[in-house]
Image 1: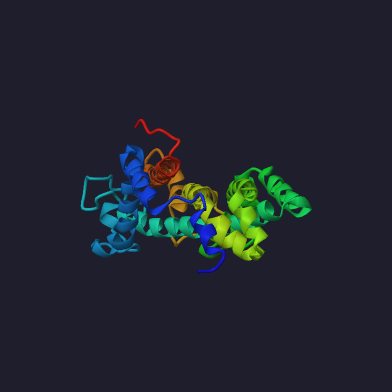
Image 2: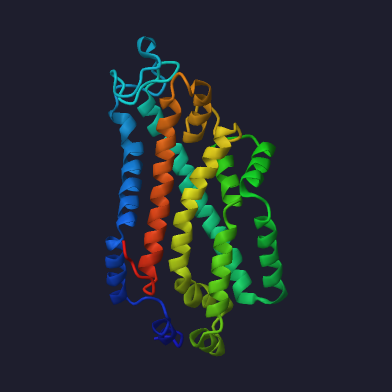
Length: 297
């Protein structure tokens, strides 16, 4: 066994036996279970739902233009061209959820790198990095998003990168604070004293102890990314038609708010359900992974 091996067993990370109480706390969190169920249903429906429908996303049914939900052959109604709203909603969900998950992954990786470096090295380098984080946080997120979106050609890849670039700062602050605290703990001091490299100390000894807040922050970032994509697409700077997204479905529906309100209500409900589900899931993970928090739900 290597000299650094005993240090891993002395870390304050949860032991394998401690995972079961955390899982039980999570499963007792009713809102978190609702959020998890809503997310699973949305993901599965968006993944396989369009293949089960007899209508295609571009199929035009002129006889049933502006059909209200549940009052005709189209379950959730049709739009101004007679296209099936349910199929377009599920295809839009693929785009919006893909942007949310991809932006979450990119922003989490970048935020962890910045927070890890700032918290570990400290000094002028850490101060400079965190002042940069504070400077970016000074800009309203939606205005920063729209400014960046106006400078590039809109599309799925570009809007994902832009959302990620405007969503990493909170993760960096969380990681920096946790690493700075753990840096002074006995196990970190002992590992440094026996000569482990900085990379080993950061990635093998410190980072595993910060995974719980990172997971919670990443979950909440998905909800924020979905909202930001919806904002940008609604304002015309995000996903462009004919590629559907929940945001541009709202954009296309705004001129029919009085004559066909379901064109806006249906995607609005789905956006609310997705964002609420991820927020509830994040709250449940936070409560489950922090045993000091009592759950009275």
